Image (tube, rainbow, N blue to C red; front, top):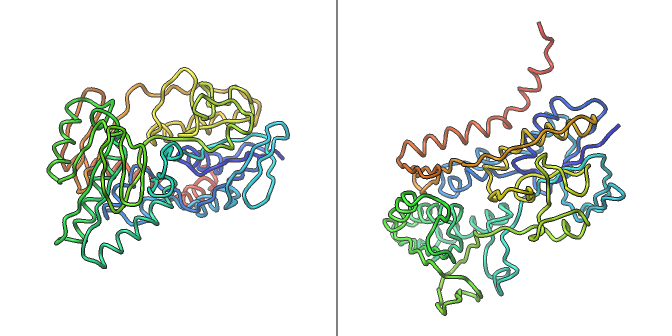
Length: 384
């Protein structure tokens, strides 16, 4: 019996579980190791912060998904990989062997290079930790009837969406107290890489909501209540939320598996490790040689079907198929309320209908995994 070991319940792996769990390769056991029961869908996280979605609407229940796809789930994290012994050391003390290994553990914001950031800032990843802190902030604001001053570090789409979501939700729960949000970025403008028309639209909305944007402001130190920048500026806030950049866990590089210069797993066009043919990776943790792929859930979702197929082929000694990342992706940037701005290459447009379009796409994605039990029942019925 061969063993396929999946580390992490990320956007790519939930599709692997759905596809291979319902129709596993012959003679294969599939095991998932994930420290969290619920996997958040990044596309709906700002909507959850805004109050538009319940927890279950934007989180995939891995217990339910694995129960209904014949995948064994261990609620534990990876600590080390020994590629020579083909085994993974887990945080529960278990050593798990594998015949084929796939890694989709995501990334975390790189706070280690900024003194005080780890101690005094709230990282958006892991999401479970952020949501716990956010619930505490929201509860305190509701109790006091006054919104705290919050500084969001990061001017990309994730930071912008989060700033708008925080402002909207705090304004709803504290209508008599202004929700003061600062958006701090080291880039000359928000949303680098997006069309000028999109930047103008989102900048207008930020200004209308009273969210101050501080460009060219690289954070170099955080103290309790204060953030210092390289330009000598100092920003005061009750809470600092770190929503920029990505870093890989140190145990990846320590394993001896090939990585890029930033410590992310180096994979080829088949999402296979360039140094170990029995190891695959996708999502934020992977760095595809020859391509500059943003650390974005959009790419992780698209990699899921290709990863599932190549894992199947690896288990049956078949031919791997290359994955071609899309050159342009559609970004639907929510603005806190039920309004969104679309960005696709040089094209940008906005409106309430864009948010409802995004809502339709996101809910359709979630339905794939919330109804896994029904798919299993259907797949097991005799064919006419």
